[in-house]
Length: 297
Image (tube, rainbow, N blue to C red):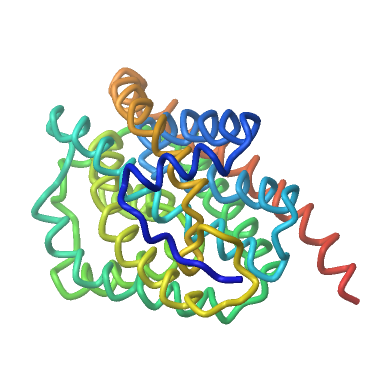
């Protein structure tokens, strides 16, 4: 029976500790540490790690296949609200965030992220996972080839398009990011790199975009799933609070660590690291969901 979280923050934490086993607590804390490091290091908000991990966890705990993928995406977006704040704080301290670009693209991102939640709600879970895998492989190839080709870049922002194309691009980026439960780094980083933005600055700016994507997208996922009777206790729409709390407890600390490391790695190495992560995630999801889809036939 559907039940929204309705207690204070501290009440939620106490209830969550009573609700979860020690094994689940450890799993969520570990996932938060890994995702937080990735958020800071790669500017991806940790979503490309959180979503597939939560899909596996939710499946193992018996949550309905009809909603577990949407829960993974919605919960991922909610955690990115917290991790992106910590990550962008560290990147901004190093002067790596283009705030002018951020404010230009944010209106499009907010609208696109909301529509992404609406779109994802219309997709069956297996197809949503398969699309995430295909997307990850595509971005892996693109970033990998870019990293092998050259690490040089133009002066920051000199070749960026005008405001209208940037707003429209923000809409598309927000839409796709919300569907896949990511902070937008997999889209923003190659987009800005294409226009000559230095890699470290592209990563820092993409971390900032994770906040409006996560806020708009997670609210959309909560609204779309609000009356779904298949959701477990402690869910608000497609956001699952026990996983959210466990992940954010460690992700905030490790996001700062990842951001610090990012500024000590060469642009070429950072691109290749990013591409490798996307490739691993993509192959895993495609392999898993070909089996799922075959089972539907």
